[in-house]
Image 1 (cartoon, one colour):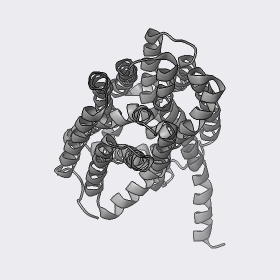
Image 2 (cartoon, rainbow, N blue to C red):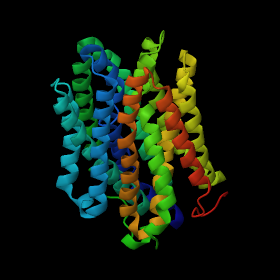
Image 3 (spheres, rainbow, N blue to C red):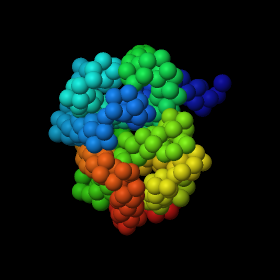
Length: 399
């Protein structure tokens, strides 16, 4: 072998642990987000069927989860040292799994609210920790081009819950669905930790080489757009399966719509990143906002499985793409303040999510449907897209 070939071989060997960290991160992201946060959506119609809970209660439970998510993000922003604390990181993973399991062991709305709140705190902290640790590991191994793969874990977790919940429902209704998803989360967490735990051989470079100078002042408009996305998208994220389940002739398709969301979300972060690299981040991020709004408006009158499926796929294909691109841009602008920027962006997103579900649930109970709530959600996402399109802080419009 030549000297260059030996170096290439050594680099490939050294990069393998970093890729294991990435795959482990995908598994844990499935637990924290795909299950810990979003399993509520396909299980909600079962709870309404078996227990008769109202839309406003459902929206309030979702809002408590997102309030917890907001608190978790704020804790990361105010106390960034938490992100390096192994006991905190393991504790939040355990809390995410435990709150999923315990949801199936009580019928108390008060207990549900506490569990969803704690689960939200855990999800936010895990999301920030996983995103930062994986991105830094990949950067140190010269593999940053793989960053977007991490967020596919959210879509894979959503698709998995959509596939398993109908089966678990047949075994024991809404309670079996929560317990079953909690058991799946345990398996995924063990697999993720097992893989990532062997990733310490990743190539190390000086810490400062991973960061550039930056400031938090440049993320204001981007964070505002991300807040509006949080308000707008969460209506679909919370009530999509419920809306389809209550549409005449579509009840059987309802759980499959969540599978469509997950399958569309899983590759979306990679595909949108490729598009952004070729056409410019501002253009592509603006398009994802506007396309998501189209999907939300389409879902207002989704009376057939085809229309509902298209609306679900558009939603799934955009919401994680927006998250991946917006988070990457926010941390890029902040440079050495990237960890704090990631937490601030997540906090803005979380604040938006607290507003949407109870308002949508209230309107649905009062008006007998989600049409007005969906129209408002789509409009807010359009405004967010306009803010992105007019943001001059992007490095370029086209590449």
